[in-house]
Length: 266
Image 1: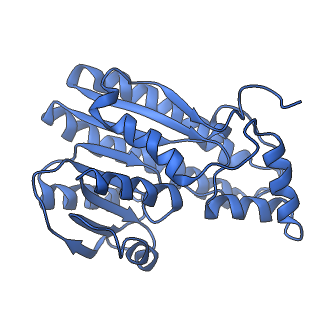
Image 2 (image 1 turned 135 degrees about the vertical axis):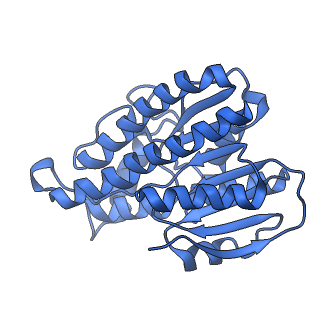
């Protein structure tokens, strides 16, 4: 599938440029809205052209909407270079694209499912880093934030492929942070806990299609704050890390999980 320009809107040219993959999802679009409010020019990338256009329809400011498969090397190079052609630079990149891959034990997970999850969630980050780091090195500045998950810090039965992928991107983040630091580039990761998004709805149904509400109740019971997070709450931390306010943060993992990892809820 070729990279295509879907929607454009120009109002300002002096703002920072932020690239977001997985932009049509709950967290991706929440980040887009916050960054647009702060005056950033946006490059929004998603595999679903129609969903992206619909999600960004009321989003103001400068924006370039592109469709691309982040696991494809040529399409990754394409969306990065279209961003450069349009705006001349990329100040921050939020590598947020990801898929959950269904619920099944390791032995019952199809190899094709595992490979697809790893392709999008890990290869997609690797390809983006390989494109972005040289660009930001030449700029002598840049901030990259990778979306992992609390499952990147612990295991969850039934989500072997997803858990493996979210552990892997934390390793990539650390290496990229070390390689980028001498050139003014910061790289960090955010690990969201259960969040009110399409993905969590899918996970609930994957565990029990007939009683997803009961699955949600069990998940909430393990969260210290006794609720799911909102996409805007995750976006606030991501956008902080992307900003100069986090200038001494690099190579780090930030959990935004309502206390899920603090310890068992008794």
